Image (tube, rainbow, N blue to C red; front, side):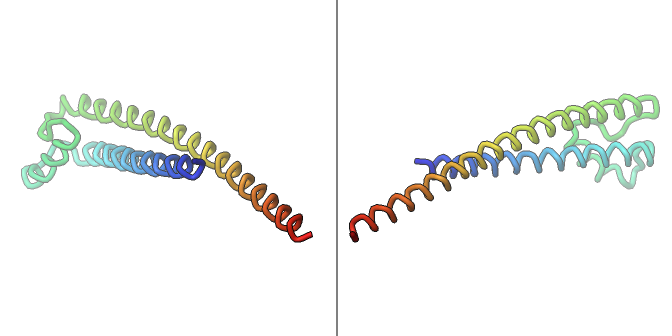
Length: 128
């Protein structure tokens, strides 16, 4: 029973870590995209196709005017902030899951040691 709980906790922890990694990648992507847009200004025709794929991933228009650039940067900063908050929440969840998992693991190890000690005592009593 305890082994199943440990396995379930481990699977849940692995899933949360995968979600956390995906969120980190999204956050890094949003940051790098915001920085590249800030550095390079409006999109040129040669990079318009590749940036349209990026824009589709970020759900924004890749061809924007200088007046609209600030709003796009603000949108990206809001997205970065929301992803950061989500990342912090998932970090907290993972840490609490790890603490719970460690506690269960310690309990399981203690139970195994007690069972082994009891078995050894029983064997020694039977041998007498």
